[in-house]
Image (cartoon, rainbow, N blue to C red; front, top):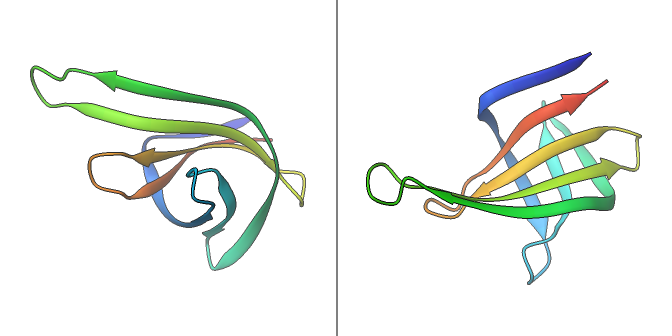
Length: 84
């Protein structure tokens, strides 16, 4: 089963200078990033309400598989999907 939050859930992220997440905080718990499986950018609707995001599909040291993203317009990080 997959949990999807289309708009995302705000999270706090610790990252390196290249914006690669090293850990994130969700529901009062910190999760350390074990590996980044995929990284991609989305830049759409620039002529209307622009959506500009950097996505990361990653695994944590606890065994979670998640998709998180950075809103490049606001600097806020979000959890978007949690795979069971």
